[in-house]
Figure 1 (cartoon, helix red, strand yellow):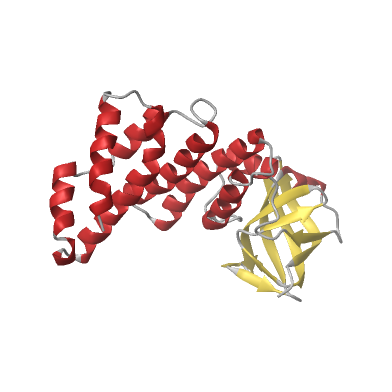
Figure 2 (tube, rainbow, N blue to C red):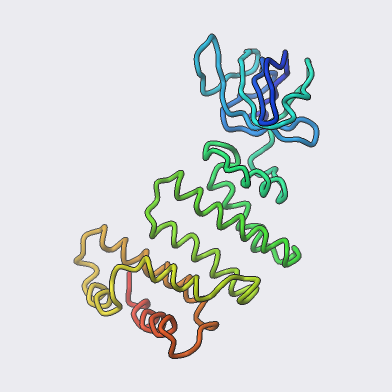
Amino acid sequence: MPFAELQVYRVERADVTGGVCLVRCVGGVARAGQVYAAGESRLWLRGIERHGRPAASFGAGHTARVRLAGAVVALLSRGQVLTRVPPDGHGLAELEAWLAGGPPLTDEPHPRTLRGLAVGGMQDGLLPDATRLRWGRLAVAAAYRCAAAEGASDLVRGIELAFVRGYLLREFGPGRGGDPAAVCREALALVDLTPAEAAARARVWRELPRAEIVHLRHLKILLRWAGAARPHLADGGPLAVALDAWSRVRPGLP
C-alpha cells in the first residue's frame, strides 16, 4: 500500500502550535495520528473532518479538513504535497523533540513501534555510547507510553522499565547507565510476596489458578532484569540481601 500524500488546498488558520487545512488525499489512506513531512519539518495529523463530521480516515481522491500540529503549518502553500513519514522513519533528535511535547498516544510512531526503535538503537553496538544512552532514555519513555496505551499494570510496566534500566547498567555501569540502588528499589517495590511465600507457591505452581501462575512468572522476569543491579550493590546491604534472597528462589518460579 502506498504511503499517503496530502495536497494542500488552503490553510484556514494557523499559529505556533499548528492549524487547520483543507487538503486532498492524492495517494494511500490518511489516518489520524500519522506524521507527514513538509520539507525537513514534521507535521502530525491530529484530526480529520469530512462533511462537517469527524472521520478516522480518508483515501485517495477525497478531500477533508485536517487539524495538523506543528509550527510549519503557517508556512504551507497551496498545492504543496505532504508525504507521510513511515513509522520507522524518525530520527533520534526528532523523536526526542516530539516526546518533549507530551504527544497523544495516538500519534505515530505508536508506543510499541517507538519501543522497538528505541531498544534497537540502545542495543546497536555500532553507535557511539552517548547515542545509545539517548536511545535508552527514549526506551524508558516508550515503556511508560506502552503501559498507558495498553492499560498495563504497574508490574508489567515495571518489567519493561527494569529490562531497559538493567541493560543500561550492564552495558555502561553505574552513573552513565543509571542508579543501581534505584533500579533495585523500584523493582522490589512491585513485589507483593516474600521470597518464602513465592517459594511455597512455586512448589505447587501447577495447581494454582492461571492468574497466579502469570503473576509468579511476571515476578520472575522482573527480578531477573533487576538482578543487573546486584554487582553494583554493597554486600550485606538491605538491597543486596533482598536480591540475593530472590536469586535463590527465582529459578523455581514458573
